Length: 197
Image (spheres, one colour):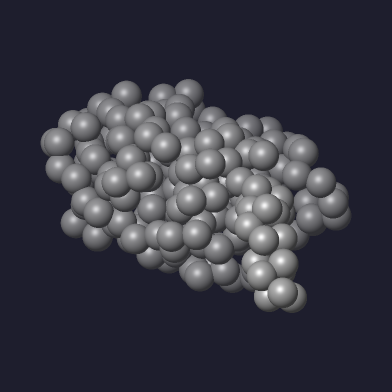
């Protein structure tokens, strides 16, 4: 069972960069582990640290100004290789949702499979959110998954977002694919009994 996702109101971390690929999210040299633990420590590793190991204080995650459970990213986030570890790293760093105007399909599916909600918004809405965060680092967004809406609480502007109904249900109830099957075991057994009768 995963953490249930219904309505989230949270502060955000802005990453206004386009075409961020999965190797930038979690570099390939950190993919040797087979469990999800520890990946959050290496999220954006090559941007967070200089080559000599010192913190890059110019990078948003190291500045202390922005904190939150929502990562707001530029267009075409999660492109590149199909590593599930990218979603693990983002979730492991404490993010529950990523907002962008476009996600690579494989990243989007990997996120949904791992309890991380990718929210696609219009370019206009995304630009407004970045503006709100520049003006006030404590600005919040509200993501209402049952209603499929996202609201910029500074401007009160909302947008509807699309999500696969099955994945929506899994997120709301905190289920992965195995949990979902087990929760419906009685229905599966009843179907099999009717079929064999």
